Image (tube, rainbow, N blue to C red; front, side, top):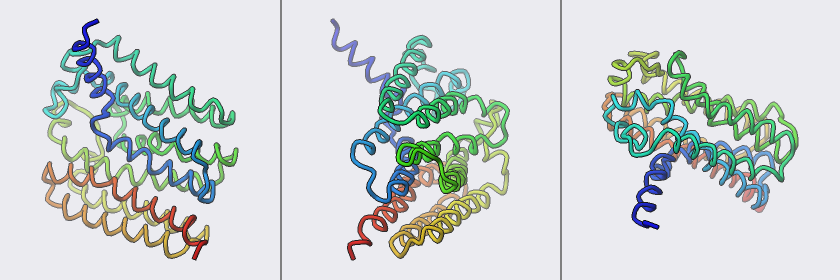
Length: 293
């Protein structure tokens, strides 16, 4: 066996799954963890937490592989993506589809101990992950669809803990959709010129000269929904402190994107990890630390 060849192939698979760029995993993971902690009132159990963490990694990786398959003809025309393994011809279409299938199978095996409701929702999640890349061809706001796909761990978390999906879960999903439109519009602002040339639909193009205002409005909607949820759940200073930090970070992003410079927009996109982390820290502190005071 040629170990150098195996190592090279594994490195290509890692890049195909974007494991070298964990921001997507984090943006998918934070809303799932918000929901898991809220659904379990701060005590989800480590087994359940690990199931959702590993499931998130696997599904995000599968989504990236499917995205590269769907966009393989477009990616060669975009400077940032033309060296992706499939587009560059370093892995085959057959390998790509096989890898996606294996990743989704592993994710499916993880949820076997959970309820049938979770299984049903997992099937919907697979459909969302597989179909999202194709929405960029016809949907003027594919980022909204991404928000549903990236937030579907929210109803799954409630189903896993409570075996039902309360209205609270759908409000949290709505907040995540608004947040996803905000951060993925920042991401789309980076590739605006390339997307115009190759004919892909994005929110940055749909919003046009109002793109910065739309990003900030979506941040505001997301944070307002989460604040309303906090009042309904009678949360206190820790939860709202987390939201306050997240709000400050959102305003920092405005300072980055208002000039529409590519690298600053990309920096703002990457920095959304800290918004998700701040909200999660507030939830954990509210549910796990506040009762001890």
